[in-house]
Amino acid sequence: MPRLYYALDLHDDTVAIAEYENWHRPDVIWPEIIASIRAAGIEDMEIFRSGNRLVMMMQVSDDYDAAGKQVADAANPRVQEWEQLMDRYQQRLPWAKPGEKWVAMRGIFSLRDALAAGVVNPPRG
Image 1: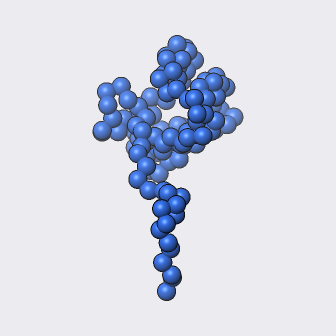
Image 2: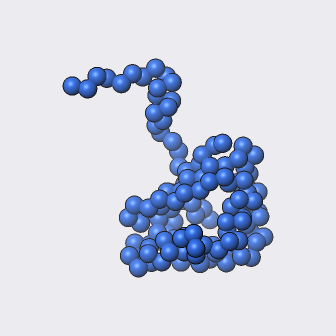
């Protein structure tokens, strides 16, 4: 199953960041949001925060269709309501394309790939 990574910023406001985190607690997040995530073929999702920067990891099924998820989300009033609510806290990255919220991240290093390529750990002194 592929893993996809995305980045997004929050408004740099301590109170707003705490509210955003609260909305994502397991006992607070709307069940319809979880259902839409799962229906799209997203097997796992995690969001991490450092300061006001968010990084989201999605582990998706092999037949995951990002465009199909966008269409389904656009047709789902509850998902649209959630997105409008979250938009109050979110701030686009400066390099985001028009209409783009979460920006795809490009991997630049993999220990697994380095080891597979024969890179050997140097002895520790």
